[in-house]
Image (cartoon, rainbow over all chains, first blue to last red; front, side, top):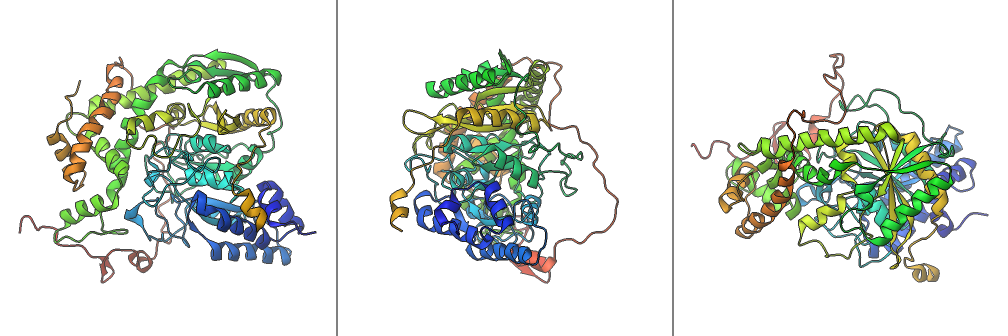
Amino acid sequence: MTPTGDELTGRSAAELAAMVRHGDVSAVEVTDAHLQRIAALDGDVRAFLCVAEGQARAAAAEVDGARGRGEALGPLAGVPVAVKDMFCTKDLPTTCASRILEGWRPPYDSTVVARLRAAGAVVIGKTNLDEFAMGSSTENSGFFPTANPWDLGRVPGGSSGGSAAAVAARFAPLALGTDTGGSIRQPAALCGVVGLRPTYGRVSRYGIVAYASSLDQAGPFATTVADTALLLEAMWGHDPCDSTSIPSAPEPVLASLEDGVAGLRIGVVEELADVDGIQPEVRAAVESARRLFEKAGAEVDTVSVPSVEYGLSAYYVIAPAEASSNLARYDGVRYGLRAPASEVAAMNAATREAGFGAEVKRRIMLGTYALSAGYYDAYYGQAQRVRTLIIRDFARAYERFDVLLAPTSPTTAFELGAKTSDPLAMYLSDVCTIPTNLTGACAVSVPAGLDGAGLPIGVQVLAPALGEAVLLRAARCLEAGFNFTGRPNLGRSTLGEA
Amino acid sequence: MPNPLTRADVEHVARLARLALSEAEIEQFTVQLGAILEHAARVAALDTAGVPPTSHPIPLANVLRADEPVPCLDRDVVLTMAPAAEDGRFRVPRILGEEA
């Protein structure tokens, strides 16, 4: 019997890929089920900037055709993937949720999107984000905010809020995000899904619009740790088009996922577990995670990483400094918006004033100031030296521990509008995720349950650079222990009547 | 420690950043950027004597490849996305307006 639409949208990517491979369902049926769910419910969530109805059906039909001809199918054949609108896609507009790029169609696919297409994945749409990935709530989108599927009055986190919301709402079993200061892990935590930031250089940045180049890294969202590993293995690996791409072949992660944590040394980062403003239920979830690790045979102890308290300050100098340089390219000359002016410098300034939103301007201003004559060493130079101190502190911690444990976000999802007038308060929601971006290592957020208000809580596991295999083993242990099966109660009555 | 941010600083930085900020934005940024910089200044108090700066998290340098031509983006496709193009080039307003 052919599964119904609702049954299909509740399945994991691994299940859907297996069903398509065995011929239990066609790729077109899988895609249609997800498109129907988006059509019924995304009016409330607004996860997508663009739904790729025609392109997705055509890609699914190609998968079905290949299967019919007896051709070998890729590991993601027929699986819908939602793509953050930071990734260039040849057949779909790429805006970075900015008015300055409205309507732009890139002349090429990003390496990651090209690899997913080659693996048979179906790009189902482009998701909303904070403009140019600058923000922690998706409210800085130049087009509209996205709602958290668990509570439509709250934010989904950010900057990859559209991708996290799309997976939480089961609009797609998989999504792509980018993580410069926590932009995958924090929305994953706030939306109750798994989100991984891989080691810097493991995933190609070619064709991903640049925000802060020494911190940016793309990664997967999924509902399970196994799906996260599946998507990671389809997207990572060396790319000659990205000179910061790590040449060595990545160690497979799926094969060792069930190896357990017996004998692993796990450190609870005390400065983050007890960070200022932490919600008691988030602290309790980290304690629960600690006990789950102990029960599974790991050796757990606390560890001090004293310099993490300077991470936020260093980040909010380094990231804007790099952004002010990267975003200089939006000058009205080669692509995107151009404001009319009779002289080119005036045209540049008028275009940027009209096309950028408030947070992007704020960070360009901040970065330009921090790099300007007289302030360069006091701000940028000092932040880079602090970055070294943080790297050294983590290296010391990893002499004693295999992985580390921390909260992902100090709080669960906050209300829409709660922090929009206070940029600094918004920045503070990244305090637990930023250290990984500064060190270039990897970390993952895993759902740990719900708080008293019914909102998802995430806990974070951190590993040293190139430690994805051990990282995901530990994440899988927490997933099994927490056994989080909750789903947002999104429009269930509406769907029932349909 | 750096001086608190003045309105003149904001105007100067906006010129460097090629942003034609409105009056309201200049006022707002003078306050907001001052507060953010105050927070950032916490790092200025740390003793980092002898600590080398990190500009990049992984030790890769001088990544080279064989100097062989490969296909690049199609010029006409790229120019279709330009705000203005002419004769296979990007077209812009005059550049030397101030000196003319």
